[in-house]
Image (cartoon, rainbow, N blue to C red):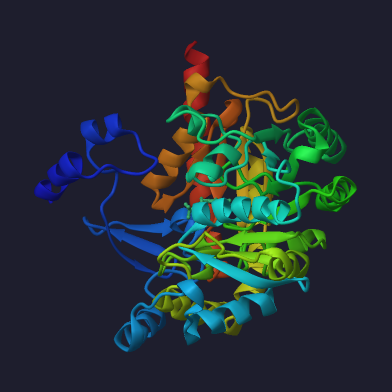
Length: 450
Ligand code: PLP
């Protein structure tokens, strides 16, 4: 084990990690195996995977059916291209299945290997859509502050969390960010999008890209009228509406696609994560009939966009099996029902303890905020690192979760596997209550010493 830790430090550059922390402490955990909602590390410690790893292992760990289907497909046809109109059965069947599940007006799929590639593909497809209609000046993308869309060039620029731009500078121009509805509500956020469209020049705006629930921004759930208003605004300006369903797609929010919670249809949906539950890297873009018809009509040359792994046969076979599990085990309904249990438990903890601010969950995508004063929503000083303390206290009690501290907030996010049972939710909530109580007592001690 000592050797592994040394090799990790010496040879492994971790994604979205502090290199300094890794060099000082080595890897946080070396995970060895997974089963259901649980992960086991190399010392035999068992953790509840409260985040489904990266909001993606929706059917839980250790599903041998998925391993079997991958093996079968690899033995038959591990890989074959889908460029130059070559095709194969797994990709065709998956495209059809996703079209059947998506909102009625979205029926054609472009495949990628993950969420960032999906968003960059969507951005390029909407620009192409406008180019073939003789409007190449319509090339700008509006998205929201606190939005997260990934780390490819376009996705980084669309992301509304500045640290991602600082890392290597702005990747692409032609992106602008409006205010999220978080804490300000629908009308102010819609006014802000309008303002940004007007400032950029409506004739230059190609699309509005938005997560139904902003995940990495802190599980920010928009008000119930929000996307109706977004749809109206996009229609008013002729701007395309792209829903980034990389987290929310395939059941996470208690609907097959998150946007269905608002009963509106976007022009494009990007997806990844939950489509394979992380058992194979695969994502894609679902486009509306309007866009597909335009491509069929006016995109005469080669569509110069494609990844080697677009429509990977093994990935497609795994995705089909994964979706079958989601459907046959009723995981979308389970997400809705268990999400209600989770939220009920959050509210009980909020009623009992004094540092809990807003609590929320849409399906199994939830969050708890920590504030100095729940009445006024006054935040803790960032020096106190309250969310990080809660994460550590959860970790000590065998729960892996994630903190969001952007903009001075202290938010802890929850996104457990959709297979979670009522008993497991109860255990998770008990551990959460204990962890928050311990942090509350620690803070009370600290503050009384000041
Ligand atoms: N979009 C959203 C909403 C995400 O949460 C993520 C990743 O967390 C991405 C895009 C990027 O996906 P990937 O990391 O697979 O490139």
